[in-house]
Length: 129
Length: 129
DNA sequence: GCTTGACTTAAACCATGGTTTAAGTCCTAT
DNA sequence: ATAGGACTTAAACCATGGTTTAAGTCAAGC
Image (cartoon, rainbow over all chains, first blue to last red; front, side, top):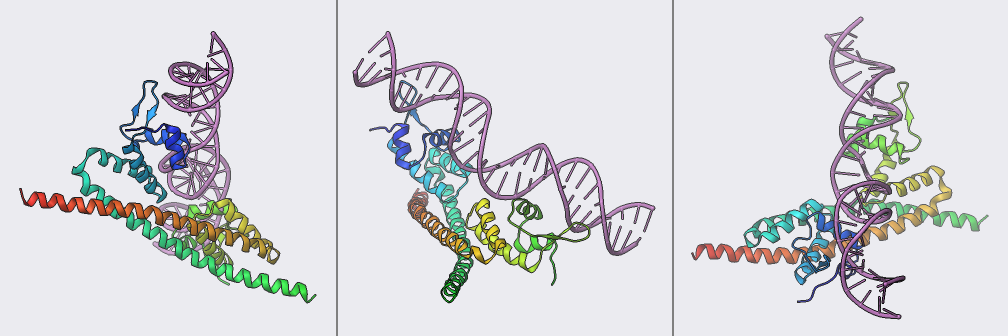
């Protein structure tokens, strides 16, 4: 099994190392092993878990909830039901968030149409001066 | 022309009054008139502007950029081009954000499928005990 | 005339999600 | 053996977006 250093993990996920240290402190990265010099070693397990963590983060799950999820992962198969419920709820939240953004975008598109028309008219006036 | 009180405006947009006061302080609500007692009076113009402001906020435009937009609105028709550019850029940002969330959601959906299968298997094992 | 409710202000406070700093340890290559 | 680079820690610092607090003003109804 090969391990990744913090710099490799950070590069992999496109975040600064400081973010990974912060996540570990917050309980989002459990069971991290250390080498003889005390440096973090990210296993395959961690890389896979981190991918999930990052997906949750990108969809705006609060770090505290992500920690709860991670705790359940560590607890094992007895928590599958809780994790499933959490993911189902989260999916609803995300879909709702996206729909709110789409609605807001409709309003913005109307503004864009208005401004495009006005810019058009203004440039015509320039020509006919 | 009828005016709205801060409580009416807040109710209209589903935010606390404190948020509207904060937005005014931050320059997101320009030209607010006051009655004899110093209370804010929201005109039709403000209600329409606020709707746009809220659409920008819901799509995660930073308050500082919203203020820039509002300043351009106050400046008048000479700034139509800037506003159009800003809205076009913002639309791209929002569409990108939404696409990132959809991608993350794909990962979450895979987790959901795994968990559903596992929950299924676990309940079957219960039955066959 | 006095209480109640709606408003005012400035300033302090809060949560979230990190980033930065300072001081130190350790391995590698020259 | 020494310099450089990668790492460690705890704690301070930061930005964003508000919310809360404390003290006060004002108008209306009893």
